Image 1 (cartoon, rainbow, N blue to C red):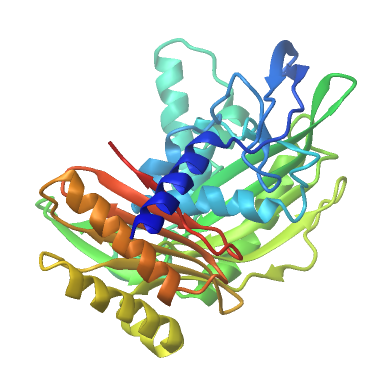
Image 2 (cartoon, rainbow, N blue to C red):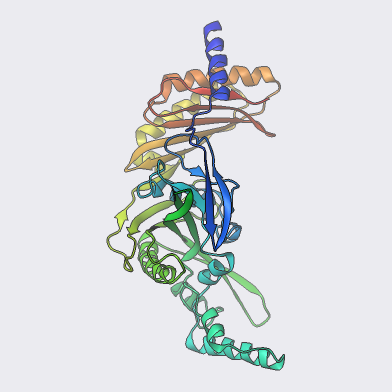
Length: 408
């Protein structure tokens, strides 16, 4: 017992004291839209697998749009983190610096996420704008007005209150995520690549109104096949538009198609396909299929498809229930690549009555990890009370000993 406590304390000290990284501090001149700004590339990065980032940190040009478009927080996180993960196949973290997207602005993304207009709808909107401008003795630029109304990428509908038409022509595209990857040359930061993530819906929620303005809510499921087919077409159109933007005619652009889970899902959706369009190319070639999935434990899907992993998690859960009478259940999320478990995150909610209980229970979980859970995948176990996170145990794939942090 005494040895185990010493081990836990040592591991905690190691976790809080070490700062892995690369001491490549570099000052660069960042030329963005003809405004030269002095930026700094940090001395450290978390690991060789992570990108360094320019400081001061510059938020994306479309910042905030994603939380209005994607209802599920776990999808918001996964589409951003997953896009960065897949970008590593094309933009080496050892050579590239990460920056949030600066080419697709907030207004532009919102316009692109809208529906296309039918010819009749387009002419009506354009004429109304022209009439308004003339009435107020303002300059009329019909070409510009018309262009603003032809940006939508989702399918058109003649009547938004027609349930059948809405179901036949759902909004497929939820959001467009942009990430930039830079290199430095002669102290100048240059965009060397762009990643575009297309977040596609799995369920389209909408409403119709009757004459009394009473709303009726509906939903329609979108299959993986449908999302992929639409995603392929959208990527082609977005590529054409981006190639017309200043500075992007000769920039490699990576596209990845992601399908969200429904808004109430405890696990995120999955990336389905990706491709790289080389510099100067105006057409998309072959797509590479991505075989990833997030699995909830416990669930029927986990038991049916990954029976052995489900049984191990079940045994881990049962052992905790035997130890702690107030245990109310554990939630697990497994991340699989090519049907191989790469990451397992377990969340244990408990009611504690003192720090001693937290220490004792953390020690018990440490032992259960050592005895039951394989070292073939990254593991994170979060122990929570009603009010806060109490402790975290983490182990990288291939390592024997979990690291421990107990919050004060």
